Length: 281
Image (tube, rainbow, N blue to C red; front, side, top):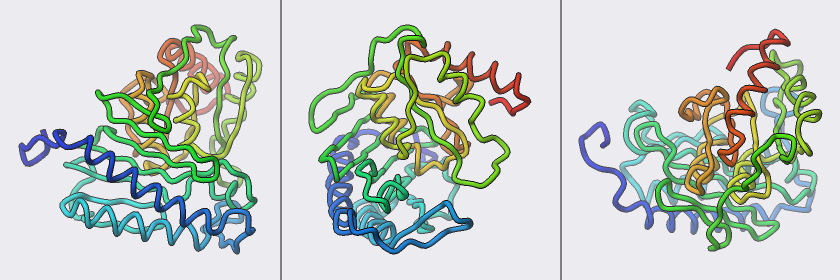
């Protein structure tokens, strides 16, 4: 139930369809710039990029969402907020990343995405992620399953970290307080393989599909995480905080797995964080 006492779930399948259409059209905007080495600007340092295509994609998504769902709150990466007068944990809130993986995009690397996620009373319930350069679309509604290009998806059945292929990311900041390098080194030793791909939304979708077995990261934003976390949970995996508590995109932390190695991953990350003097979770 929402803060108004009215159920918010009945039309989520239609909501998913609308969000998929919007993500597909935003992806076409991004394809206009992909491979052109577009001009870039820097947000707060010389790492975190933004391009005109981020902004154009965001404008399209926000306009279309606001038109389709005029009573919803919308929070987007490049600063657009609609209906932000109420708390983000009340009712329906859309989190929009118009271009997740801007550095990949700016260099012509095809792993970038449009990410549109919906929370209801603070819970990630619906996600849509489109990767236009490779022709992939992912979506999911918690309780109703998840899809990749309209095919049902489910996580892997890997039961041990030593057999797992895991992925992570690193903060877009110079000399961050927690750089993830200790955790990365531990997983290089413990897992079958480790990857860094550059799009948190796609990392999460790849766990949902069973192509990767686990993903963890810190220092992100809800627009990076909400859509993918909803898709992981919809597919039958687990997306939580690093310590296994309920996912909360506002913390910027996530641990997503096939479910079978979730406790193993959380325990290993905790051990590394505490032994290296880092914060936990």
